[in-house]
Length: 324
View 1 (tube, rainbow, N blue to C red):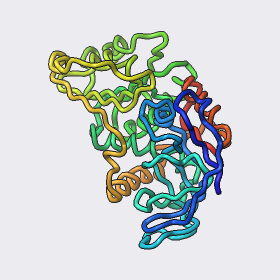
View 2: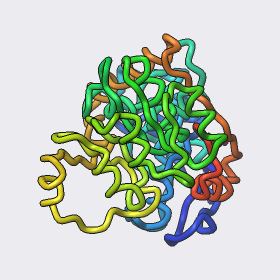
View 3: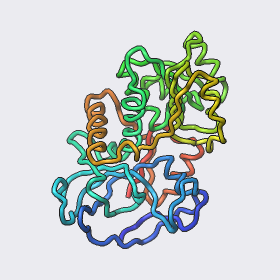
View 4: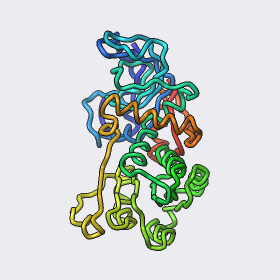
C-alpha cells in the first residue's frame, strides 16, 4: 500500500483526499517508482475541477521525480536505482509510489537534483515546444509571454532571452515583475494596473509581435490577438482565467491571417523518442546555466489542498513541488 492523493468527486481543493492505495508489482514494460519530489501544475486543477474529466475516483498529478525500485519484464533501458523523471499521462503522481510505463520516463542526468527535475519536466518541456517547435524563437524576435513569473513563464523568459529575443511579460504584482526581470524578461507589464495591449504597441512602436504565448485564456484572449502582426501566431496553452468563449473563426482573417494553436505537451512528447529528444534539449539548457529552475514553494504531499489553494489564488511564483 502507498499513500496517494485522490478525488472522489470534482470540485475545489477541498475534494482532495489522502487515501491508501494498493500499488502492486510491475508488469511488462512497467517500472515501480518511489517518488522523491512531485510537481504541481495548473493542469492538476483542471482535472480536479472536472474541466478535463477523469473517471472517478481518480488519482491526480502529471509530474514527478524518483528512484526506480523494480522493473517488469522487457524493460531494458531503465534499471533499479536509476533516478527518473516524467511529465506524461496517465495522472497519478501525487503519491509515494506508483507503477508507470518505462517509455514515459527519462533518466535524470548527473548535476540535476530530484527537486529540480520534478519542478521542470512538465513546465520545461512545455517551454521547449513553445520556443523550439511552435515558434522557433531567434535573435531579433520580440515575444509576449503571459504569466511571466509562473513556472512556464520563467523558463520561457530565460530560454527566449538565451536565444536572442526581446521578452515582454505580463505579471500581477510588482514583486512578480522583479522576479520576471531577474529571469530575462526585458519589459514587464503589470496587467492589474496597465493595459497590456497599449504597452505592447508602445514597446514595439506599433509593429506588434510574431507570437503570443498565452496560458491565461478568457481574460487575455482578445487583446492577445490584437498584439499580433499579420500572420502572427496565437499560442493558447492554458486557461487559468477560464475557457475561451466560442470564437468566430473569421476573426483570424480580419486581424491579419493569424495562426491559432491550442497545443498540449502530450501531442508533442507523443513517443518515447520525442520525449527523450525534448528532455535532452531541456536538460542541456539547464546544465549550461542558460535556464535556472526556481522552486519557491514546497508542500508536504498531505498538504495538496493548500498547494492547490495557493496556486489558484495566484500566490505562487516560479515552481511548486510536493514532498512525499
